Length: 286
Image (cartoon, rainbow, N blue to C red; front, side, top):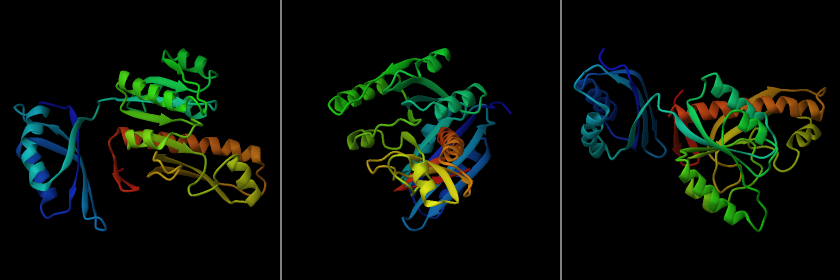
């Protein structure tokens, strides 16, 4: 074994005969050992999704040579594809408002080595979480938002994303609605945590609405952001059984746990390159 660096190949293309054989044969011919291979044929849309994890046993092959030679396979099957080193961290911008539990959980998981991310900055429309962020040695950026300043602040946000070379943005209970234009600009690159099991109770005090309805199940949903509020492709959902003894305050406490779990799972799936957009759905290889 001459190269233990692992790589991930992600590919999407129109469904056709021979794709899996073509890709796996290509890698094998170049001395690549495939440790994971997943594929899914979406018959409704006639598209195929594939993810492979491999390392190179052939000392003459490199990531660059494989990418160059793979172009022939890509052209044959009209593929949208990429090859990424599995250990490469994803540069990530986090946005928050005043709730700290999702941010705190992400910081904890990062310290424990559970998330393959590098936090480029934390942006907030409030100042309250600055001490938490700066204790970690992370840049904190205050971007207050009003109805009148929203376009200018969103333009500044795009500048920050570009300045920091951020590849992913996480809305960790950021309580501002992004404009349709911004959602389009960042399509597939923004993950939001919604404080309900979608579709569910929208608007203010969702756990109080759930209490008023006497629900027996509450949850949280992590999804990609689109211009349709809280209706983007779902990445992860977490649920918790409850009953009539739960007060609204108890539901809020349980809800915090479901939110942190769903968001962390979604971030992990995305940064391990296990997610594919398929219209308003996601294809996820676990």
